[in-house]
Each structure stands twice: as structure tokens, then as C-alpha cells.
Length: 453
Ligand code: UGA
Image 1: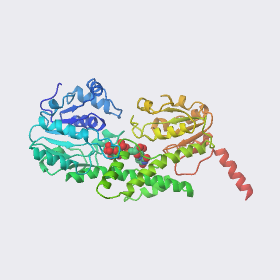
Image 2: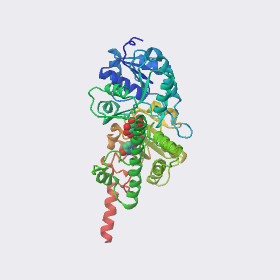
Image 3: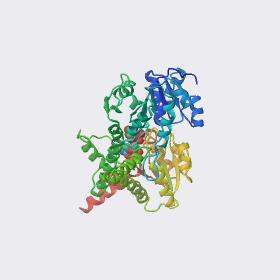
Image 4: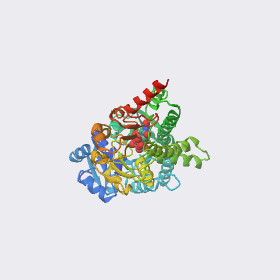
């Protein structure tokens, strides 16, 4: 390891959060030691390769490594020595009952404490249930480790993490040691964003509350979308109208196939479990999860209906697999459920994604994967958009029209509404609006109606 002594920050865990945090902190001017225990990931990092796809990260990472602002190591003792702040960014995956598994966080803190200099601040960036940081702080005091433990929740979005790091709406640090909190806050230098120092349990709940509230917004608009389909309204217009009220806001009111990813489904469930543990049934969270499950089922039914009820033996081309654009992350991606349901109905699936093919392959047995969207749609009886990557939304749809077997597009993200598909002869179906027929058929229907009246 080339850069150890004097590294002012150590980051434990080179997963998504740890790697982005370490790289961005190095870019801010800190000297950062990043610890990773997975040998394969470590090798990739040492070779200057980012093990995850995040726009702009690979360049920033190799720059930080080259300038020796960042070093990577498997040796936690070596990395912690000399660091005044140790940021813990290891995973907290769900246990079978939905609670967060804190074993990696506990193991990291247990490995840090014996080698940390007195006064070192351990900042928990991993998402931990309310009360966890306070318990760890108390235990550190009891054992006289001389370390302070603070909650340091993260709010980065995959696909725009670098931008989010540089422009945070707020930075939250929670703990009962004001000097420790101030030291973590000071790492952000002159970055914009409101600084908020709270007790650690409140900081932990800010994180869960933010993710749960955003998930609620998505499920709410998806319920409105169903009502729009039943009443003839258009969910886009309704979302714009709702979102124009600053008390509501337009963000996260995009209807579609619901939320996925490594955070919302896990955190909503964990908060629900946590509430039950404290004797409170958090009904809104249960509803948000159930709506999200139903939304995927409704979407499969929509595809089936758009294909005239016959899916068995037909070819469906799936555009986009990642849980959102700008990432290769397939964790809890709606595509996995939707594709499996369509396969159960007998469909033959081809699929494409600009970044997630490798991570998708083991999750999608029986699916023909290709990196060429035009090959993907060749001979398809229906084209289904599941992730709104700009490169997929911006396909040459006239060319797609010439390649497919039947001109049917079902849009799970409402991203193709302005692509002029009916004018190209497509039956176009989106979420939260009545089915749009090809222009010629719609015009003919209008003519019949006029003659009849
Ligand atoms: C989310 C939060 O937005 C971050 O603030 C947080 O730091 C992160 O979780 C985390 O806890 O680590 P992320 O999961 O990367 O970030 O993605 P989002 O942009 O929040 O999207 C989550 C899901 O909701 C995606 O599947 C997306 O397609 C879906 N979504 C989002 C909608 O269906 N409609 C919307 O209007 C917005």
C-alpha cells in the first residue's frame, strides 16, 4: 500500500456507497485509504478499474489513484492507522424477516476499534436501524476505546451519485459528541447543502424516512395511474398538476412499473419491521410495498392485453433491464419479475440493456440477451420498455417499425409518449392513460363515430 500514514480518512467497504464516497472525498482534497475484503474487487480497484458502472466514476477513480489521493488495501489495521475519521460503508442486507443484518457493521467496528488511535471518529454510513449508533457509542464508551461513533447517513442516487455528492440538499451527522460530529461535517469543506447535526437516532430515521417517503410517493402516483386508466384521465397531466404545488413537488411522481433497487424495497420493509418491533403497525409502508408488487403484475396483464390476450409462443423484446437508467445494478429490478411472469405465460424473451447485461445474465435464464437493441426487436410481436435509458428511448423508431413482426409497444416508464409511435403504426400502451391505437385506426374509428352521429 503506497499511501497510508497521514491518510486523513479511511473508508471501510468498497461497495457502491464506499467507493463513491472514497473517490469523491479524495477528489475534494482528502487523502483516503479504502479498505475492501473481497479479493476480486480489490484486484480490480488496484488495477484502477471501477467494479461498478456509475457515470463518471471510472475517470475520477483512476485520477484519484494516479494522484495518490486514494489508495486501496485489504488490510484494515494499516488503513485505519493515521485516519482521524473512519467511514463504515459495508452492506446491511435484509434478513429473511426483513430486518437489517448488522453483522458486517459490527464486524467492521470490532476490527476498527482496537487499531484506531484514541479520538478517532467512526462514522456509520451504512444504513442502520434507529438506535444502532447510540448502542455502539455506549458500548465503545463502556470498553474505553476512546473512539466516538456517529451516524452519517448517505443520500446518493445510483446513476447520479457524483452529482449528488457535489450538490447535496443536506448533510446529516448524528451523535452525542459535538466535536466528533463537527469533524465529520468539516470533511465536506465548501460543498453546498444544509448542515444538520442531530442525535444519532434522528439521523438514522432521516435516512429511512426519506427512502420510505419517496417510495410512498411512487406507490401513490401508481395508484393514481390505475385510477386514471379507469376514469380516462392522464397520469402525466395529473402528476404535473399535483407537482406544481410546492408542498407536494413533481419529483418521484413518475408512474410506471414501480420502484426497485437495493434501497427502497429493503428500507421500506426494514422500517416496517422495526415499527412492529416497537409495537407500531406502519400501515402506509405495508400498502406502499403491496402496491409496488401489484404494479408489476398489472403491467404484465397490460402486455398480455396489448398482445390480444395471446402471449404463449410469441416473441417479446424487452428494452432495459437495470432497476433504473445510469447503472448496471439489477438488485430488485422490476425487469426480473416482469420477464419471469411473461416467461410463465409462455413468451419467448429477447432483451437488451446498455450496461446491465453481465449482471442480468444469471438472473434471467432462458432470455436471449444482446447489446444491439435493433437485433433485440427483430421479429418481435411486442416491444416492452422497462428502463428509460436515453439511448433506448431515442431509438430510430421508424427502423424498429421495419424490424418487428407486430407493431405493439408497451411502455413501463411512460418515456415514449412523445416518440410519435402511433404515427408509425404502433399500438402504443403506457401506464396511467387509455391505450393509444395507431393513428389510421383511431382516425377510422372517429369517422365511424361521426357518420353514426
Ligand atoms: C435511493 C434514494 O433516492 C437515495 O437518496 C438513497 O441514497 C439511495 O436510495 C440509498 O438508500 O442508497 P436509488 O435507489 O439509487 O436511490 O434510486 P432512485 O432514483 O431513488 O430510484 C429508485 C427506484 O424508484 C427506481 O427503480 C426508479 O425507477 C423508481 N422511481 C423513481 C419511479 O418508479 N418513479 C419515480 O418517480 C422515481
